[in-house]
Amino acid sequence: MTKKNDQVDKKEIAPIKIRFPSELRMDLVSKDWVVIATGRARRPETFKKNGKPKQIIQKKGCPFCNLENQEKPVLAFLNGREISVEKGIPKKWTTIVIPNKFPAFAHSDNLNERAEGPYQLMDGVGFHEVVVTTDHEKQIANFSKEETKEVIDVYQERYLDLMNEKFVHYISIFHNNGYEAGASVAHPHSQIIAIPTTDPDIQASIKGSFQFSQAQKKCVHCAMLAWEMEQKTRVIFENKDFLALAPFASRVAFEIRIYPKEHHAYFERITDAEKWSLAETFNVALGKLYKALNDPPYNFFLHTAPCDGKNYDHYHWHFEILPKTSTWAGFELGAGIEISTIEPEKAAEFLRQQ
Image 1 (spheres, one colour):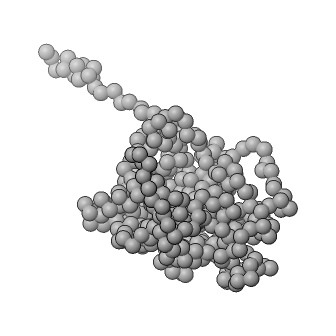
Image 2 (image 1 turned 135 degrees about the vertical axis):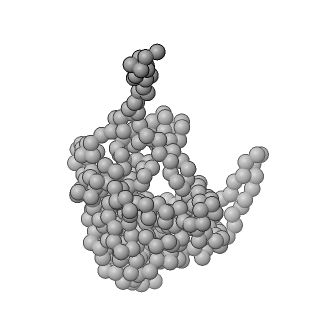
Image 3 (image 1 turned 90 degrees about the vertical axis):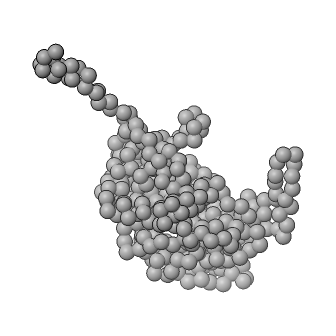
């Protein structure tokens, strides 16, 4: 065979470059996979929420504007300072914490653990509280840094109180913004639930963090943060103490996570100076999301080490913000794998521009 024919043969068997319609990306901590659907990726601006203007719930019928029928508050702040709740609801307040009128968990001195055939169960023992800010319409995305700092102060103070209660092993702090995100009351509010078990999501996060620290002798989140700060492509905002970024394996379009730059396992140990930095980061992140997606519904929640007395120094606490940019369908429900229709790098770039 001639040299010319050899060249023809090689050309004929050259591999065909395939353009794949998606990328599978693995979360380094949980080991979960997500699909970044690059083949049908949408432009960032198409995620803006459209439709009819929001229906404003009148203050007259709002349970959080009229607290007379609520239970006695457990904590209240006025313009950055704690005020007394001994006599009930203060005349003036800017943030207040009340027991949830329809709680998912209730206080008890007995878990009443039992078996039912092959199943295990216990009573829903715990605490369920609501953190209410005074303005009926103003949400955290539009808060001043001082207002956001006050909310963080309240989160920390209630965490420190609840963690010492009997049977409390984990405390979930979360915020639902918008009806689509599960907010049954339009008035902005967060919730705190203290329970005797640790939820599966944080268990997976802690397990992955521990396994990485055992194998690599360092924190998995610190390793990711170092890479993200070097690459910059997914960073949305940073200040001295905190970093807001679009995760490499984003579960939904425009997901944001906020991490302390230094390694800290326990949110409740945050310092006052760090709370100011966190308030600034929250303001910027939520403000950019508000502007970029035209006030989308979203959930944010805290991931921190459990308060069950065990050592979780390998963990790295953080907040996760998930806007409602998609709806789970058959594949997501069946496979447990989310599909995001925008690369986190493009989402981060778009948010930085806001």
